Amino acid sequence: MTTELLFREDAYLRTATARVLAVSERGIELDRTVFYPLGGGQAGDTGRLLRGPGDALAIADTRKGEGPDRVLHLPAPGAPLPQPGETVTLEIDWPRRYRLMRLHTALHLLSCVIPAPVTGGNITPEKARLDFDIDFSQLNAERIERETNALVAAGGATETVWITDAELDTQPDLVKTMSVQPPRGAGRVRLLRIPRYRSPTVWRHPRGKHCGDRGDPGAQDPQRGQAQQARGDRPQQ
Image (cartoon, rainbow, N blue to C red; front, top):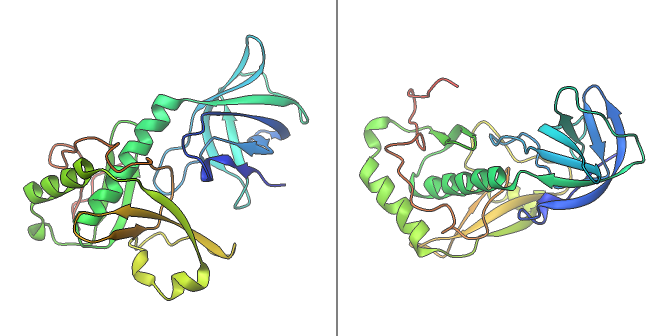
C-alpha cells in the first residue's frame, strides 16, 4: 500500500481528490496526496479533508508512514474519521505551505553563498535555520546578506530534476548536507537546480517543497533571523 505523492511533481498543487486506503490510531492513509509529510527539516502540512458539503475534517499534521511512499494524515483530536474506500477532497493550508516553501528556497540560496557543509537545519512557518560546519570567525554577515539578496533580486526559475543513484555516486559534491543523505533504493534521486549569478548553475539535494523562482522568497536578513548558525553555535530547538 503506497500513496501517490502529488506534491513531488507540483509543489503548487493545493487540492486534489483521493480515496481513503486505511484509518488507524496512527493516522489516515490515502491513495494520493498533496500533503507533504514532516521531513528534511521542514514541518509537515496542515489543512483539511472534505467529505461532503459542510463536512470538513481538520488535518493537524502530516507524517511519513512505514514505507518510503506512505503518508499519514493526522486528524485533529476528536475529529470524525472517514471510512476506508471513501472519496475525499484534500485542501492544504496554502498560506502556511507557501511560507515554508519561501523559507526553504531561501535556505538553499544561503547555502550557495556560504561555502561549507550543512550539518542541520529547521524550517517552520515563522523562521528557518541552517547549521554550517565552519568557524564563526570565517563568516561575514553583511556579505552573506548582500549576496543572498543578490540571488533573490536576480530571480530565475528553479528546476527539479532527477538523476540516477549511479550518477550521484560520481558527483558526491552535489550533496552538501553532512547528517542527511539522499534516500537511495528507488534508483533515482531528486535535485534542485538553481541558476546562480556567479556560475551557470548550482545543484542541491532538496527535501521538502521549494518555490518555482528564486526571487519568490523576498529579501532576507540572516543577521536578524536565524538563517545561519556556525559550528559550536547551534540554538536550542
